[in-house]
Image 1 (cartoon, rainbow, N blue to C red):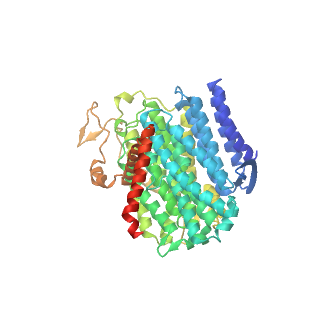
Image 2: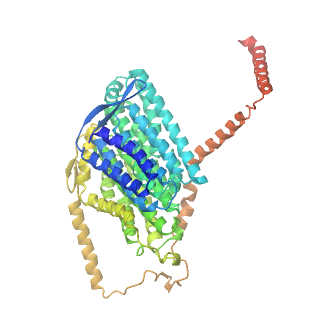
Length: 620
């Protein structure tokens, strides 16, 4: 199956799914799964291919086109894989809800449009698919129809529209100047363009990509969107949809501009790449501590999404093969991790009657073992615990920062990891550990179609942590397609000029440590099994009817960082929006619908002109 046929199947299949839903929900669900599975398999089989082809479609005299290389392939596989798991998870999660035909149609449309974005061979195709994703996302965020859902959708719409308009201006300018929007041709022509013009295009397009990637200070839409979106879509939104902004940055910085031209976008210590690196570093630290003060399971993961995106941009802005590899690999890893954790949060929400308040949960480890296993793997991966995939990508990021002599940026990355440990533990403990509330005593295990995506992603987190060479081969090939050299890889790790990561040695050390702890434990005598509910406080057993979930465990820390953890950037944008609405409303009142009012406006305008003429004519 060709790439063009895959895209046609994606868009046409989404519409067919909606039509079948009018006939049979079973047929609709079956087609949704088969379509997502077929597209995923078809793109997987395109591994290693490199081509650019015109489509039999045009717009304003320009032919649309598609291209495939390893960077596009890697993003496409992750998009379609996450979409497939989201569809499967939705089968049970969304059962019994209203407007399901519309939901599956929009979800599959986003899936196809995201694919079109990363395989576009020209900026026109790229922009059309980009906008399809953006407007479909607004519809899915607002699908619940509540006031908060609509408000979150509108907030995303306004910010996405601002970013898209900036990008559109840049694209129209490129077409007017070079009379082409084909990506390879633009890459050739931009090298000879004036530096001021290149900077103009770069700033406009970067603004659009930063908004969608939810980096500081354009991050404010994401927590609200996650809080209101359905959990299966949250996994897509967090794992791959916001990362189309990261793909856009790679396309702009390393494909259209190239490292040679990037070096010219610098004025002493101030350079485009340095600014992007510090935006990434600020995002890492800020988001980590914003996550720490959240009590909603999905909001804490939304802020995690913001922060981990900062790692990707921070590493990729180093413009070295190791830094870019760290950024791309962290994108791959966090795609798996964020989807996994949102599936876990969705499963808990589904089985507990919609509960997302971390202070109202606890003790679900035995009631929901699959979800607990997924949460353990996901949290450890986000933190970067050895033998998980997140450890390898963070090791590469730290290594690249220190190798390039960027200690302050490295410190920001380490500080973000410390914050990640704190909010990761909070997420895990407050949901699954501690005492089980009486109202959740009969909570059932996760249904099969919800457990399957969790188990698949958990396995990938561990496999890619123990055998990192498998995904790193694709990451290295993606770096080559952006103009960087290939990495020194083995199935067990990566070799750099300043050191080697070999997971075999790490695994052996961990096994030896575990064995030593086990031997010590065995030598200390017999243990006494304690029930999960047998909690203690100051040596005294807590009565069963008491609430003991360590809900305010981070209370002292919250009071310390609270004054510094406010979201000033989002407050500024929201305040600007409110003031703009007030001004617009004031101007709207000028349109009264009465001819007399408009005659009065004309007379006042003429009077003002006469006043200016009389007052200023001696000096003119």
